[in-house]
Image (cartoon, rainbow over all chains, first blue to last red; front, top):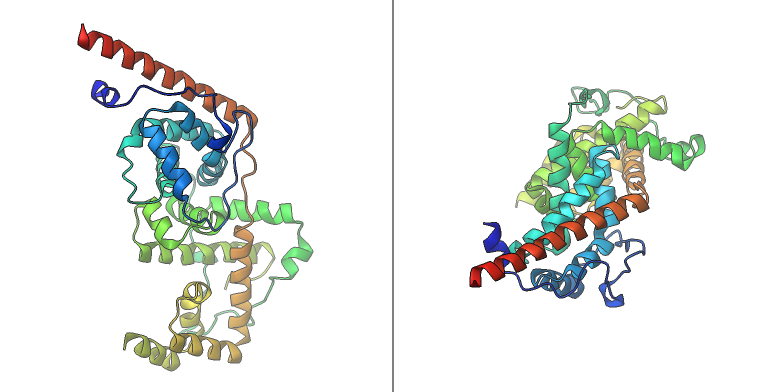
Length: 237
Length: 103
């Protein structure tokens, strides 16, 4: 099987560490940040994947320079800790190199990379010891029988949050709340709200339907909102 | 027709629960004009839902500013070293198989 894979590849044209300027990065430079709402990677991704399919190892490093920071961030948020993140990233880029030929271009290249990363991260989460799961219900809004809010008045703490906590403290609070989400829900929030992927892209990356993404995203956001409200001494409702 | 029905349903049951269920689609601009009108009509009458909406929006906007930070230099170096090593082995295997298949 391995022989077949290799025999169909062209002889590598360059080696890792010989990245040129047109590759979009240098061997020692930092990863190129993707804009929050990304436009399709387009021509650059297409060129890189074609070079990679031809066995060009420099293209792999160029792809690494373009996406490693983003994918590391995604993996770290899903895993909740740094320990396994390096291995996940390592596995993802090695898979990209080995499986480049299987990328048909049906989805965006970046979506494929996100999918590989999320799958690798979720696989590790499933194999690791299970964290004690937090019940969502406690932090979701509750309503009276007639459909009105159970606890009234609902407090608007959107401005007081910034007054009460420094930005890094808010990030820590939210980060802890994010860690308490179920892994797939966490992945939905990471891809949608942190990475700015569309529902369709998030669905493609996670192998979910678009309606499932919308439902999970809304519920996860309600949970996060409830956690922040409780932290501030208010009711989650 | 479905959109009209949804708007009518919202008017009949314009409870805070219904409004809360629609927040995600409202913020994404996915509500039909009729449902959106009813949604906003409810907000005009219900300060609780306005406050809830504000805190929901705040949560989403804060999540958007979360970042795991930079790719650590050590991780970068380790992963690149791993990839070079593995890629070179694959190339060596390629030549080995090429030579032996023609021999």
